[in-house]
Length: 385
Ligand code: COS
Image 1 (cartoon, rainbow, N blue to C red):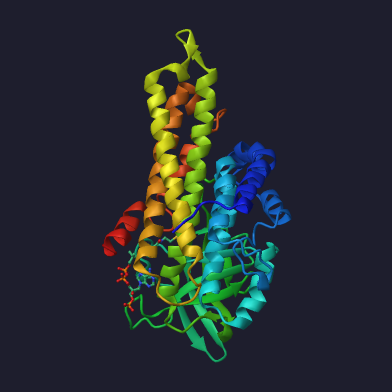
Image 2: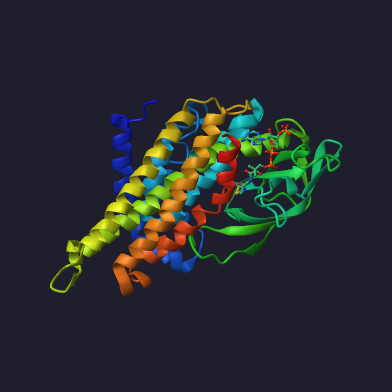
């Protein structure tokens, strides 16, 4: 399959790179330090109509597809990984709706999500259900025309900023977790839905990560997504799709660190020469460049494969699942290695907050963890062999 960028995609990438350089990069250090949800960045993404990049036109999106979304995420992440999380969480929270919601649910929720007027969160993880999603304890019990949800979620990105929250809960505890799980839409302000602990994180500190407490939260019966008990395959398929923007984020973080290191080593003089002239450092940067480019090509190829696939409940081809996990694994590992090497290239300056590479190194770490750890990606890849 060909995945060369079209003229439009090259222009899109250049435009986002310019916006990121002028409007997103300047506050990245402050956002990292303050660790507050960046509403000013939401405004920039709204003004540039980026929330609806991968939404169908009939719901107000621009239907640019997964590859274009990845180009956007990559360029934003190059400047500020925390800001790119806003677009990634948007894709994560809306994917179950694309895959399995009713026409009425789509009509009700997607237009305001496409414009970015509403934000969304995906409430999946629990203290006992991280890598093992089948261990969910949050329960939903039918009560007349409603479902009543009880439980707690942790590590939920932007749960405090979201207007719409997609919640995974067990609707039949007599069955193994992956059979009795369902997904529900809950709206901000629903009685019983509250925000608990805010995590104080190592990286992507400008994004918020919260606990969500669910106490007798009533949602109307029509807010279930797909069939009762049919949530697990929707969750798995959602992650198959959304691991690709995570890979794009990792590529952006790696490229941002490499660009900074190249520029720095050309300016920094030691032993009477720019340190870029030393072959030992050139070889490091040649390796970094090769790794980032390889991660980028795997990510673009995967995005191009996925954009041909219909968003419905059918199981994805094995090959697509394999590519998604490989892209996420390889790009995340690359981002961690390349950012660590960038800190090394800057030496003492790399270790202090006045220079951005230590932030990039801290930001890179999460790409090896969220939406499935690197070890889980290896399990997924191995399961397709
Ligand atoms: N798409 C659709 N359905 C899938 C699927 C996929 N990619 N992968 C598995 N399933 C289905 C299986 O077909 C099976 O259904 P049936 O029993 O009807 O056949 C069911 O899901 C269970 O499959 P399996 O036994 O393989 O699941 P496991 O519980 O062993 O879990 C892993 C598999 C580890 C791959 C899965 O739990 C996973 O991805 N974990 C990581 C979760 C994660 O990313 N967490 C971070 C969340 S951040 S939002």
